Image 1 (cartoon, helix red, strand yellow):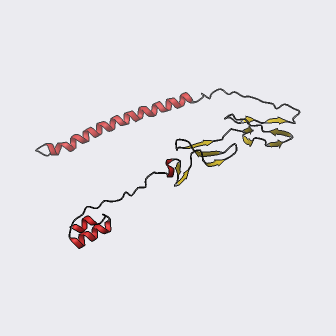
Image 2 (cartoon, one colour):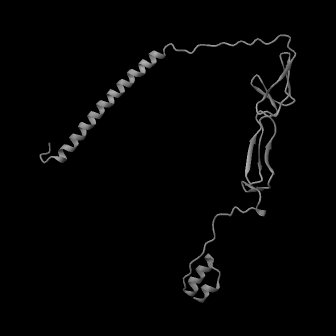
Length: 185
């Protein structure tokens, strides 16, 4: 029994102690999880790599860019650059300083720090573009007929469900009948 008290309690020592001395010992197990301790106690853990406070973890520059950094509270902060410093022209996005010429019209991007892409500054066209707006009235033709069809379907469905409920109730009475009656009817 003395040998159990002299050794530190580790799994192999416990087995040795029990076999050699015939004593019993209760092993103490080390935790299987790793502590979240960071060297120096400051920084952000990102997939096993520790970043210092204020350190940029990832950054993709440009209009469609994004990034992540470690803040002063040891939290990872993510951001995106969409719209900042870029322009939009006919559904396409361009970086600040980019120039594009299409059909004799030259457009230059002068992006700002707004969260919305700026329009490009275009020159070179002697004719102003024609902008037409067409407003269409909502299509109501056929809506009433569809509503009527849906009402008929709903009415038929509720009638069918009511008939099924009656049939289930009758089935329940029939199945309870032989077990409940002494005559077996």
